Structure formats: C-alpha cells, structure tokens
Length: 599
Image (tube, rainbow, N blue to C red; front, side):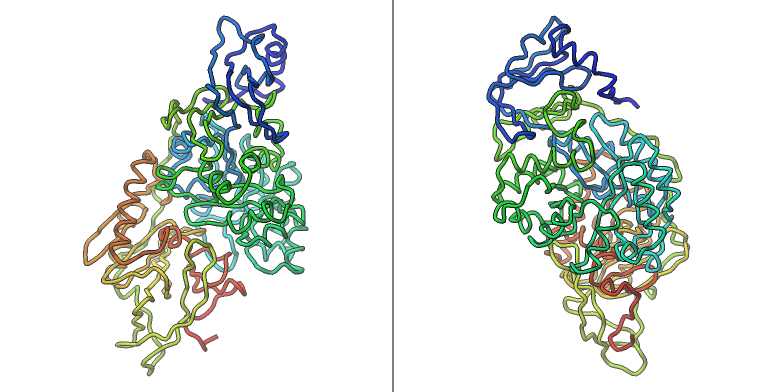
C-alpha cells in the first residue's frame, strides 16, 4: 500500500540507534510541552525524535538525535498531544469514501479511525467491505476496519442486498487492516444463543481481535448479562449516566458518542466527573458524522472540546480520545501516546481546553497545518458494480404511497413512528387520522413514510406514518441511505411528490433528493453503493447544506433532521421502525400492523 509503515520490529534497529545518538532522526520537535497520556502529566520542555515514522526518543533533551539531515521543528511553547483516535465510526455516514473522509478529518487532528463499514456490507456484502478496507489502507493516516457482524442487523425483520456469514467473518480476520468484529447489533440473537452470531464472535476471538458491542435495550437484567457473556467488549448505545456505569462494571468499555445527531457525552461523562469512576474505561467516539459536521464543526477535536466543556479534565478527555481507544483494541504499543516505538502521530496546539488544531503529523510526516491538508489521500478504483446499486424494478406512482384504511371507517388509530430529537431511539405513538376515499390522510404533525425496496428491483413499497419532522405543504424527501438495510426511505406529505423523489434517485443511482410543490429543490448525488460520493468533502457538504435548507423551507426545524430520517429503518433500536417487510415493533422484535387493534 502507498502509505504503509514498517512494523516496530522492523524499525527497532534504527529506533535504538537514533535514541542512542548513533544515527540522526528524521524529525525532532523541540520547545513544547508534552502531554503524556500514559502518566497523565504535562512535561514542560520534553522533546521527541522521530525515525521510520515512529517515535524513537521521548525525553528532556533530543539534541543527541539531531544530525545533518534532521528536520527540527520549534513547537513555540505549544502542547504536543497524540493524534486523535475515533474508536467507533462509520465512514459512510459522512457520505464520503474513506479517502475523502480522511482528507476531511486530518486537518482536525484525527490520525486514527476504527471504522465499521456495515452500511456498504448491507448493499454489496463482503466485496464491499473489501473495497472499503483496501481504500482505507491506502491513506496517510491509520484507518482500521472492523468486519461488519450483522447484515441483516435483525434477521427475519428486514432483507438486505447481501448477507454476512460466519465464513465471511473468518475470512476477513486474515486481512491486514481488520482489527475486530463490528458492532454486534443483533443483541437478541446473542442473548438467545443464535449459532450464527456466536460463530462470528468465536471467529473473531480465535483471531485474537476485539468484538464490538451494541446493546440498545434499557433492560439491565438477565439479557444484558447474557449479552456481555457472549463477548462484546464495548458499547456506544448509552444515553444516561447509569448506562455508562452498568457497562464498565461488566468489564466493557463505555463509548461516549458525539456525532451529528448523537449528543450522549454530557449525559454520561458524569460517571467520571461526578461519580469518580476510573476514566481509563471510557472512550470517546463519533459513530456517525455527516460531511457538513466535518467541514463546519470538526471531528474528534469537536468531541474532546465538548467533553471538556462538560467538566472533564482536558488531559483525561485526551486520554479518552487516544490511549484508551488504542488500549481497547490491543494497540497501545502501536498507537495512542507519544512514547518510544509508537507511530509518530502528534498534534501541536496552543491551548488544551479550546484545542485549536494547528499542526498535525502522522507517522512523522506533516499532514496538515492551520486547517490545510498537506498530503494526498489516494482513491480506490471503484468498479461499476459499486456504482449501479439502485434497482427499483419499475416506475413508481402516487398510489404506491397511499395507505388503504379498513372498510367503512372515517378515522383510524394509526401506529406512528415518533422521532426523538438528537437521539437514536424513536417512540411508538398512536394517532387518530382521518380517512378519505378509502385511504388514510395524515395531517398536522403526522407525515407519510415509505420504504422502497432497491436492491433486487422487486418494486415493493411498505407504507406507514411518522411524526416529528414538522413538514408542511406538498413535499417529499427520499434517501438511499437507510440504516442498516439501505433500501430507500421516502418521507413526505404528498404521494405524488414521494413518487417523484423515489424515481429521481432511481435515475441518478442513489443519494438524497428533496421535492416541494412539483419540483426538485435539492439533490445530493451518492453514486457509490447509493451511500457515498468520491467528491471532496466540501462539495458534498455544500450539496448537503442545500438539502438541509430545502428541508427547512419545507417546515422542518428538527436538529440534524436528515440523520434522523436515515435511521428510520434501523430495526435494532427501539421503539418503532419500518422495513421492507413491514412496520417493526423493536421492543418485541416482530412485525406489527399499521393500525391499533389489528394485532
């Protein structure tokens, strides 16, 4: 791979020679204050010497490492902190390929990412995972891959484009960039002893790698204990202080996330700041960040700043975004601290609380300065099979998006998906809706929702109702990003607009489109698997900004409404979702009817 780095074992002779003063370092950084996340100290005047992309010497005086060819950087009394690590994230949520995601986050100081490409796994299977894995390894920073565990995420409740098998997991464990198993979302399967889920976990453990967790239930009784016994080593689905406490008491790492729509740090970090639990078992992550957040607000630097604003000591917050993450994946001898032998990923910043990311080195190379990217992030040659994934089977019409009412009624008590702002869970609501001409006519805050099958061209459409977006007038928004099955989700107030939006995405090969009053108002093209663009992040963010503006013009005031839209088919998080098989009651993990009283 273009940006491969020698192992510590391969580099050891040179590292020893440089540290001993027998050979010259490639780079020496002097005149700064080193933040040691191993000892939780700030060491004034400590210097670092770099050779072969790794730290060779870390100590009070690196002058003996300087030779004729050594680049010497004056830190100008700034802090040296380790490159930031995102312990759990999905590249596809940025609507970018790994290369463009890396290009977007490097200037924000992210030098390591542990990525779970289960979005593309649902569309293209193991082959899609391999494409993501291969492009990740081409980057000048560390992008490790967790092999997706759940495609489908809830067997029997949805149909994906491809399925992941234990044999796929076992094969992937031999790939060079695979560090473990992606989040085990099928927690009912683990609790029930499902052979397939346990076989995937076993294959990961036999490879000596980490099993990612996802336990979205509030039940902390026997099922929770059974899930942990199955092997998941972390969880990012907590939203309350007690969630974080319960996980670390069971030997899990509690991952606190701040993404584009997830604000779960403030409510849980009090387990450390107020309850005094050991902070080394807490990890910061983003989970899902769209391109607009990356361009306008930041990445892991944003998460660390937020943790500090929530009362966390700055050095402890940095530990949660560096050494804690590396330790969790068994890579603390490779990443996460400024210490001999580790990859030379280091940031220069003038303030630990506000954390301006001023200079970024990755593997000893300057990769960003003053917000500007200084390296190339190579692209994978994505084949046509990855660019032709939206198959509707036929042209959709307005009648496809209408819900027939039971005969002879003037109103129905409909089950409605209730969106909860800034959180992954939805609410299962019941609303009385009028009937006209034999069809349910949602009004007021209730809109229509449909899931359109797009993997096999069946022409199937499942309809329901959703509340919380606030849409008004004749409008619709359609997206081929529909976690986790990634069919097409269409939400709207008008059946004709919904049909137009769905057909438009079939025409362009995937993305997001917003329609109002008979015309398209915004389009984000996502040609790769209907999930990603290989355009630069700023271009995708600009298109996404237009999309958000169009949603707002249609009456939506919800924070990060698009992220909420894209999760409406996530049938592993309570309470009510939609899939290609029907409306899903996630509290009972079963298909349910659209109207109350029909069960």
